[in-house]
Length: 126
Image 1 (cartoon, helix red, strand yellow):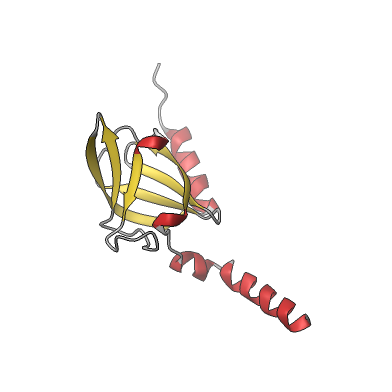
Image 2: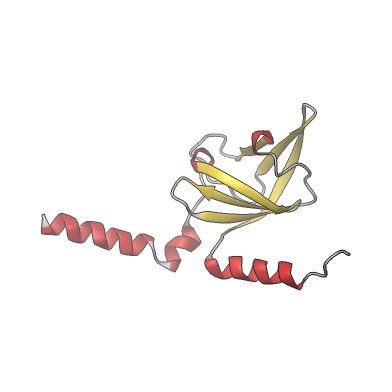
């Protein structure tokens, strides 16, 4: 019993380290939710509540409509990890728009704070 508990605690410690976060992957079939702070960025959360920031090649309209987004990985299966070159699909009036992913990184608390600071630093429209 103690051995099982120690093994579980050891695994939890390994999985919570920054090295694991760097090597983590966002599997297509594990996508839980997302939000779009702008038309070039998605913050995607998986079923394990790990967050990732996806940077898109160019502007991709209608990202804020959840029912209109899809994710397509080169591997083509739900077990594939999203990576650079994969695609976010947005349907606008039935026509799919392909938005290539140029970067995907774990969305750490530090990155989130930097994003919030950048939004506050932007000039407000009158």
